[in-house]
Length: 375
Ligand code: PMP
Image 1 (cartoon, rainbow, N blue to C red):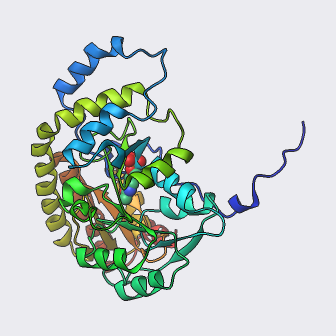
Image 2 (cartoon, helix red, strand yellow):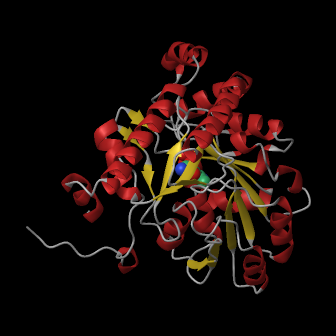
Image 3 (cartoon, helix red, strand yellow):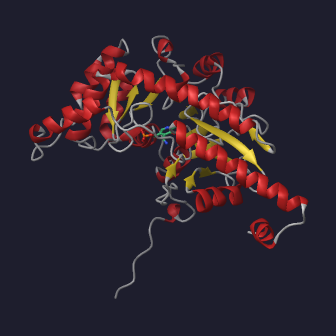
């Protein structure tokens, strides 16, 4: 057997995106929509599947979908780019506007793919951390750093994943004025927050907006996202993108879903309502600190978060996301808004786990509890 030459040294310290494949009965870890696609869409897809033309390459630019997205957003087709999930488009932006000798300004803790893509593409990383207490962006520090120059892309997750909060619109406008860098406003959770920077595109050429079909539109399994930007930006991205990354099935389903988007409204409103129930339920638990959210997930802080995460999974088969090892998110877990029964099961599980911890502390730690604390 031969020896393998090592990969690029730049990859040595890189940790792959934590895509967990863990069995559980209740999945509340990935900000997915708990509901599958509506029955009408599935029926139409079933009858169309024979006409997809699997032997043919897809339309490389998803032009049919681009046209619909452009029209709905009051833009032209040239202002829209469709990708294999928002993830691909973030990477394309990093390839086109980042790269060696260039830099991205990030506001951690935030969506980890920004930093991973910067690293993979050789883009310099300029972090301006959020405030420790409430994850608000340090507006003054960001504006000061951006106006110093030497930054090519600024990324603002809005609402921010995983903390759930929005930044003030006035801050984004100040940022757009302070720099000629591309400012990517990641609106992956736009349908839940109902806040968009779209009205500001006409006055700010450096504004780029990202959206996805993965959350509100129940399509995480098919991988479709899109960017809204100036034609000049889209043209550059076309040079770096993979030509056939959005396959025929994904394009067909995304077109159907977008046409039927009104049918998703009630489900989105339900998620927003259940988010408030979840938020209220969590904040009524002793020893839990909940952070306000505008997305379809809730971030909370609880002592010994990793042990709570494990108890949720192993004793209650509920999977949430553990962020406790992320700098700035010590003792933080993130739970996605699920179906009504899933949220209730999660809250009951949390109640039970925390009650047994309190009992163990009160009556002197049992051997089991002691083991948990040590882990
Ligand atoms: N941006 C943010 C802030 C996200 O949370 C996600 C999903 N985790 C994405 C982009 C990418 O989503 P997708 O690739 O599924 O479109």
